[in-house]
Image 1 (tube, one colour):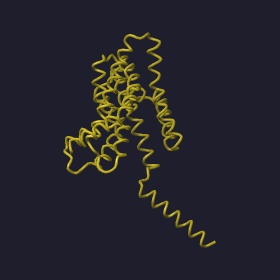
Image 2 (cartoon, rainbow, N blue to C red):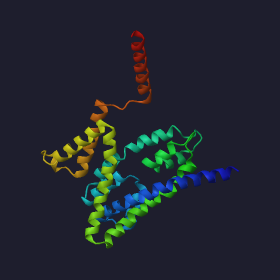
Image 3 (cartoon, rainbow, N blue to C red):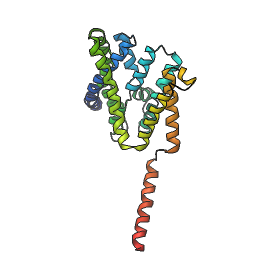
Image 4 (cartoon, rainbow, N blue to C red):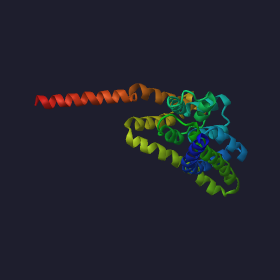
Length: 257
């Protein structure tokens, strides 16, 4: 009976991860075009994607390789860009069964992406590693396969089509940024400041001589730090307390009237 439940949980994760994997396939195909420009072959692209599950992180990786950036800069760049996964892993760790082994904990967190984090954290009770493994099985391989096929397409398709496909990745980044900018003024200002700094860094003495990867690291840390200090994100308790205080003040005013 217990084995049947485990199998059912794994299959449930497999089913929920498949739509995510299909979306990943389309995105990583465009990344494969970038990887081809960086000189990677399909096998190398597959390995890169099976180990790095972030579109922004992989884009930075492939463009850094294309620009012959030093290994230290590549490591720092991907670490900074993928830093949000530390927070996601910490959030998941609060929902792990205390008896879950360290191996399962590490492997579940290794397979975390924005979407896989969402479907795992939305489940009630403890995080089930069998469900997480099922979702990873049907999504992450499609991510890696898309990169490999994108590299193959970059090899055989006409140059005009390859150029057009490489632009689609920028469209994806815009699609990610714009909705967040509409919802949050701080995000909008941060994005605009990042654009301005990126442009100005091409003309500032000494800084203009730095590699593209180093510039991205500086801008990311600088803008994120300033935004966190000036406008820190409120936790749930603070929001609830402020809402309660506002309600109390409003009721007091009504009574006085």
